[in-house]
Image 1 (cartoon, protein in one colour):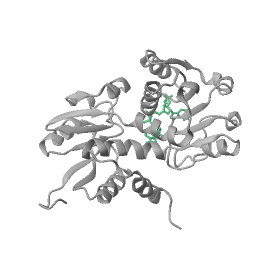
Image 2: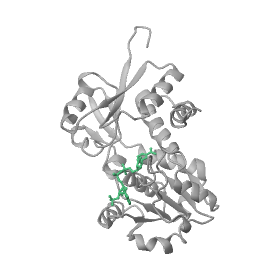
Image 3: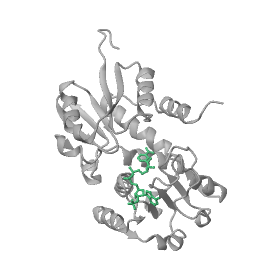
Image 4: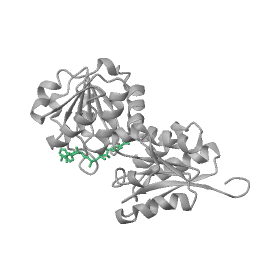
Length: 284
Ligand code: NAP
């Protein structure tokens, strides 16, 4: 709270939101920096999305994160969309600039920041295999292409969605939609494999999106899932001498970027990470 007792409101619009770690993460960050902000999760049913967006202006909220299922549907209700969010075709952060609502997407940039910090890959020299073509894949593929990846292969269960994603970013880099049957040959030639599917997520923690026997030394294997922190895919990658990269960093950095957009301050990422880890790792 500031000296006058006022708090600036931020939050999350999703459906459901009960299990979100974002409120704990952002409120810990605001406390750490002594900022008079608060973050609240709002369960917004799809039919109430327009009214919820209007409430950002009406209540003078500084902004919100947007999560499943609203990331695409929210776009027509906003005043402006950044070029990155426009290309991705989804918004995960709204900033209220004096009544003008601007839609950003921090998922992709958050992912690439985390990947480069943890793996030290050189994107221009590292062909990439993306597993999946859903909303998260769109953000990741766009950010990878934007930040210099030269060659991207997309393998999705529903091939048509992979084709559509490849077409969407074809102007940015060399990108191909491939069939699942191509994976065994392709994986010998790429440096980075990214699981953007939900396969392996809690509670199905023993599932892997590809045959673990295909993983080999020299690969960076990245999984967007962060619950569990080490998925079956990442465990198998580690056992086979590949470099594992988990999804927690992406979650922290997409939040850190939103935090900075709202407050203008650099986010205390270590506190944010510790806060989320303390929720995900059960105390004995
Ligand atoms: P989404 O839009 O629903 O897309 C799901 C993707 O997974 C689709 O490509 C789908 O293929 C594929 N898939 C689902 N079940 C499958 C199965 N049994 N076998 C093969 N493919 C399957 O979801 P999303 O928003 O992209 O999220 C995907 C994952 O990313 C989730 O686990 C989510 O937790 C994670 N994520 C993490 C972060 C982070 O900050 N770390 C952020 C966003 C998302 P079809 O097209 O064939 O259905």
